[in-house]
Amino acid sequence: MLKTFLYNDNTRLSKNFTSQEFRCKCGKKHDYKIETALIEKLQALADVLEADKVVINSGYRCTAHDRNVGGNGYGQHTQGTAADIKIYKNGQPVDTRKIACKMQDLGFTGIGNIDRTYTAIHGDVRNTARWFGDEAVPGGTSGNVTSDYYSYYGINKNSKKSVISDLQELLNKKGASLKVDGIAGEKTISECRKYIIDKGDKGELTKWVQEHLNSLGYSCGIPDGIAGNKTMQAISKWQTDNKLGEGYLGGRDWNVLLANV
Image 1 (spheres, one colour):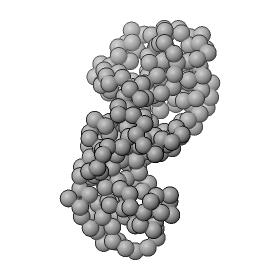
Image 2 (cartoon, one colour; image 1 turned 90 degrees about the vertical axis):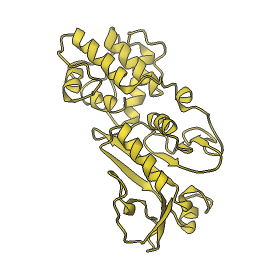
Image 3 (cartoon, rainbow, N blue to C red; image 1 turned 180 degrees about the vertical axis):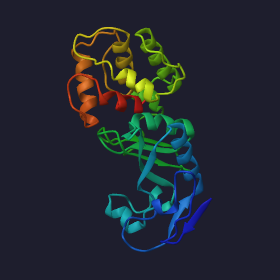
């Protein structure tokens, strides 16, 4: 259902969202529209990702504003069916490659990564043909780049819980006493921060990092548990994209890495 709101309206729409977050950013005090199905899907997305917060960079746009920011003046934003967002978990932005896959699972019909750092993404509930784009690649918004984001980004469909559980189990083999619950809580992160992954390191933890970076789109090659040149290059690229110090993986890197499981 499409609803119209007054400029100064600030209705609570769901647990994470109020109407004012979606009003047009053109600076003029006009009414704006929001499709309730969009809010339902955005809230489901926030819940499944266990988000700290979801920032609405752009919600409804009037025709003039849509054109001013590069749109055609009649796209999904002008219909109240779209939002450009950033999602944060543990204080860190969640990688949009992961978000795109979750959006696909939840039935968003328009999805598109909208920056090269993979931190901002477009989602909509269009009734027309499905669109899956990626502005990080040439021509990535002129049409569909894929029909399946999991295969496009090389992300395994294994649940988050199993990925974290595997990590907890291998940390316990190293002497930790973690509850294997699939939750990346403070104790799990604290145990990870005892370790670094540097060139030449070998073992199950190195292999877990390789598999996880591969799933995020940073190619370590075949996960063999050996931190060779390709693995270190992948770590460096991931650190650069997440505005972290470059070199070995350790310390605060773990907080950010686990926020993107």
